Length: 448
Ligand code: UGA
Image (cartoon, rainbow, N blue to C red; front, top):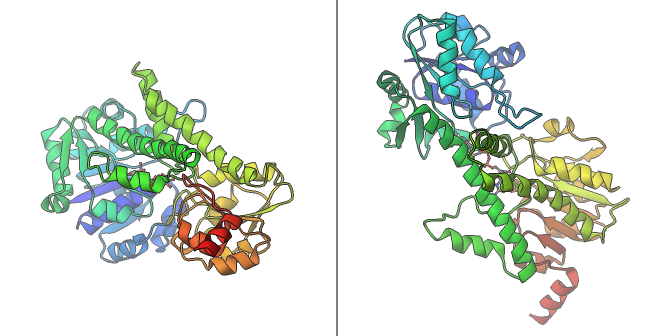
């Protein structure tokens, strides 16, 4: 079995490498010569735990190849995956499909034997049919079918998600294409992974509906967290108990500073646009988009409020810049909203992220970058946890407190427990739990 992967971005590179792990011969193709040269030299252009080891193993085994040349790249492939970018169009939030259509146009004249063209990028309903139309128009003699095969990878856990998915979704009407796709996913099929065979439109919508639902779940619990803060309830206990109901499930119910990343913000926006276009408005998703935007801004406002509305000249330390742990991705991260708002209000920012500094430097100015959390805490008037990197979970709070001008900790990922904080005497502002201040903590400690 031989497949080609057009696009060596996140989805393309992870999927191509994992297909090679299945024993398939894979050629990854990208127009970006620098990227391909890097890969040929064994360098991985993205940060994804475990990916480097697999790429090295599969390239050494000769199963994984990289090229900039489309013709040699797709030669002999039974399936050609299109995994190019689909950014949000700046003007209207629609997914920009020009790269997908361009790839279809360019590969059409090169098709020889029967080939399945697979759209792997997240694309609006109707894209697979349009790809089919383009290829037919460019090459009326081509023998091919089109299938939609959306990816459900989480950054930071992508290899595990690929190798042990909850389901594989394949959208095509053609039995011949279904057979090819079944062959490709044979190792998972043997493991009894559910393979969902549907029409292309259904497959395309499954991806958007899944991401939008998860974004809704997060936004729901974030608003419940606001209510918890006002009523004295504890959001972690609320979500834990809710999650015990099998119909709800406990995952994606962690309240925080709002969702970010390259998928949820883009896909919710695109789904809302698709709804408008087809006159089936997705009003819940529209509200989720607004609520999440407000939430990220609200995080900055909370920090400012902790200083009674005036952060001028204050030094605020930020721990975690990436949109979530185990990635260097800062796209639509809460930090991109919070840091500039604090700077605009006159605060000085110190920051540390285990991986994201290089990416973040493109977005921020005048940030004093540090190499660890303790240097960020040094002389800071407040410390804010924006991303729950593991190394922030085990900080010596005693040492942190000694270094700061005042012990003010804003934990927007709830990685510390109230008991730990009471013990250490911080003023502690978290999400969906009531504020603990040093006086009340000391009084409580004395009373115990
Ligand atoms: C998401 C989906 O989880 C994947 O299934 C999907 O394939 C991918 O988008 C995609 O469309 O390609 P990803 O963007 O990597 O994956 O990140 P998630 O782990 O889903 O987290 C998204 C955001 O939600 C992060 O900012 C995270 O901090 C936030 N989040 C997540 C919460 O605030 N609370 C939670 O309980 C879970």
